[in-house]
Length: 265
Image (cartoon, rainbow, N blue to C red; front, side, top):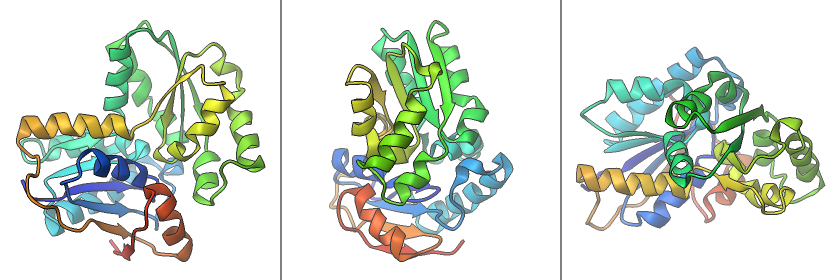
């Protein structure tokens, strides 16, 4: 089906997910929306996030005629996935970044204690904990809000003294003693994945929502007959507030040069 895939995030962190989808589904056209005017979502109420998500989904489905929506934001997935899924059930697949990670961990089958780092709202929602308990109640979860990581990454701090200090401060928390896996519960965190792995000397398996989600999309698209077999069109990238810093950062998240366009909601 030669319609685009809609992807949205609170900012540009979801470009890590968009890039993974482009790699594994190279024939698909992407329409990305980053709600940079309202970031970060992680410190906002579920009700306010819900209102943002409603406007973004309307833009992707009605103006851009997307065949599927990917919620490339853990906070929005935690607060608004069920609403979007139920509203559009039977029409377009709504895919969140949380369920594929939970499935991958359960399928792994050997984890005993798993850590989770994410925004305050994602942690407070309890979505990861509830889904994990439902799928495998024997897995112990240790959770920790890490509100400084996303803005640190947005500002370009990685692989330096500042990022190392912040990462070490969070990951040395007693909650994470004896974990054998860690969920990177924010799409931004992919950019510091190597630093996190180094902190644990490579002994802790890291889960993020890039390739895991893209593989899940292939599974869903094959089942629903949504795989595009024609030549794809140009990908489009929109943000609700355009600044030079976002334009410069976007290429780091997407791993290649892209052009952002301003779209006010």
